[in-house]
Amino acid sequence: MRSTMIHQKFLPLVLLFCLCLSTAYAQKNVTTVGLQFKPIFPLSFLGTGTQSQLEQGVQFDFSLKSGFAAGMVVRRGMTDLLSFETGINYVKRTFTLDITDANFNASSDFRMIAYEIPASLLAYVQLGEKLYMNASMGASADMFASSLETKGEGYEHRSKRKNVLQPAVIANIGWEYRTVKSGYWYLGASYHRPFNYIYNSQVQYQRAGKDFIVEQRLLGNYLTLDLRYFFHEDPDNLKRKRVYYEN
Image (cartoon, rainbow, N blue to C red; front, top):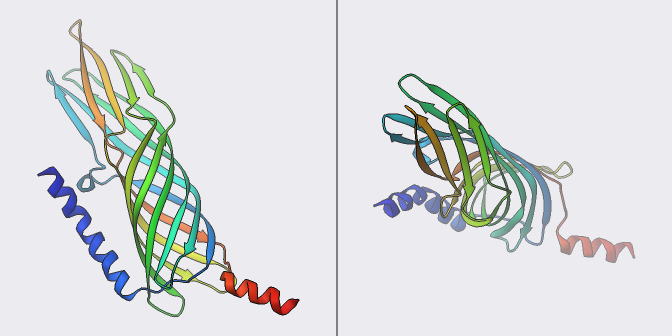
């Protein structure tokens, strides 16, 4: 049942990607380098919302509150239809642990630092003279910096990373405005979903003089708003022609 729900979530993106393949336009032999900044937004229906545990009448909530991904993007036009995109990103996720008891409430924040190396296949639809729409799907290698720990009155929290390196699936849709001399300006959205949980969190909580432990496997799913700028580059064949004519 869970696998079917995941497939249904990705179905619209797959259909859009197939549509782009049928009507797309890309720039062959063009290599562009860009910078990106992507604020992270939690949405429950995409599996990025609050994860909760109720144990012995005590509520434990782990919530992805905010974060961002920032880094460099390299795009290579493979054919007149498709482009390949890769790069490296620094990612910071901010989580909040909320503990709600009958006579006690506590809250603490902790931050997860990761590095991502994505690889995607893009297809384009030309909407106007300078305006393009694209869709992409691919994979990412996610590397997590360290395990985490926070403490407060009556509790101790530890989050241990599952693995240093984990794979994830990524999907993207966006629009870009291309200029001749000023590069490309891009606005879009991306969905990032690791194949497995990324951290195992444990909370040791003291109630009525007794300790008990609650465990929660944290998902690394996130949705971003993508802001990118690509520096303009000429196709390789035009560069060679210019060198030939100049000589």
